[in-house]
Image (cartoon, rainbow over the protein chains, first blue to last red):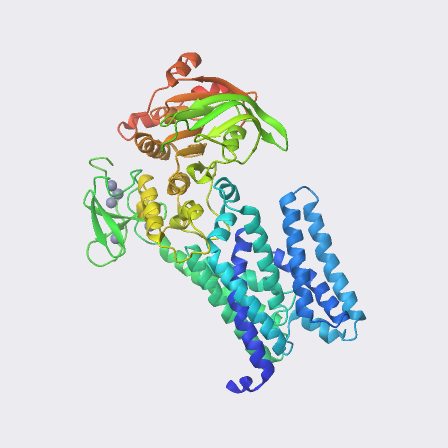
Length: 339
Length: 268
Ligand SMILES: [Zn+2]
Ligand SMILES: [Zn+2]
Ligand SMILES: [Zn+2]
Ligand SMILES: [Zn+2]
Ligand SMILES: [Zn+2]
């Protein structure tokens, strides 16, 4: 099993997978939140033109792709903030122009073999050079550190842009930052995942994590775990199965999604069976007049001889002692009213 | 030092892209007032209140908030409760995570290890307590009812400890029982001396809290007076709910005096 570590290219590919598996979902969650899931895809298209420029001028393709993608990211944010009916079309022109120019220019370059093009589009485990790896490491550390430090701001602006503006947060700069983080992630991922599939690793682990979590914080953690499983699993599988690594990574991410969907369906069925308290408009709280009793991690309120605990938009019926829900539920009249 | 006037407009105009929607607005609001902003849809009430929030352009005239020109005021001191029919987003978030956004303007990203994290958590917990959602801090906001989500938005604004709360239709689209709870929350806030500016169509639901009525019509403030005078003018009783006591009140079909201003336009 560990024989794959004997190959230098596999060590590079695995380290690259580790980096993108951790970084892509952390940036992607904000794209999902802002409903911009396909922006990463568009930036991948544009980055191909950057790769071509690098190949034609014999400079480092990763660096030329980085410059191109970041410039495109800035242009996208400017177009979006100006709005208007043509901004959507302007993006389409840029994305298709980018990939068309990339394919043509790579064809013209000396290294422009079909195999080389395929590896840029769909990823390859043999593509990551040691130079790439140092660049990726520096970029990934920057992306992860920025998205962790600025997570509350990115979250706030994506959650409610109008409120963020009203409370004086730097909305334009935060949106620009997200766009640039996306561009950098695209470039870091292009060797292993490929420019056409990059967006998938930013989005699918988040789609899976959303099924299993209640909070933004836990969704982010779960998405990173899924991203790591998919990226590392995809690279290892592609070594043995001799498949393009990017496509393999995406398929594994989709399998994870299916498992998560099944788990959440089972969880849903379990939730539906629990014991709800009788409906009342009264909200329990410290001064509500009902006796509060600590129960595990929450408070139960003694309500006409029942113990009520807040859950979702209603109250649950809790039993004293062990934290088991009463089966069957019950109906009763409120003797004293809520207050 | 507490502000002398909360809002002071003198012939102020607000609008979009240089075009005024509201003009000639003159009003002065003192600390502790609870002002209902009424008027037909499209008459400019949203433009006016959003102007105070810096969301629409201030085009001319004087517009002071908290004794300072609108453009210079500390935005954290103006709490905003937007009109939202749902908080459900494309990603999950807990009640506490949403309310924490209200504390964000006090944080600096270059000090993640800041010592005031405890103060933030206290402010969030207190805000949730005020709106009666203390027990649901960890709940997924999309699982809450519409009225509960409205209270989450109020808590988010309160978490910033503002000097004035600007609310856009806080009771719209909320069932009657939840309207009573919301009115109770606003009463608690009013009793604490919170100044509020409330855009609403449902004056009756808030009758116990309102101390003043502004009517915005045809792009300007067309009427300004006490709720009692407003009642006399429109002829409809502005009868208060004594919420939570008499069940028979709940079944009374609410005829809203503001209906007289609605030109049959359906507000979303
Ligand atoms: Zn109670
Ligand atoms: Zn319990
Ligand atoms: Zn019960
Ligand atoms: Zn109860
Ligand atoms: Zn329940």
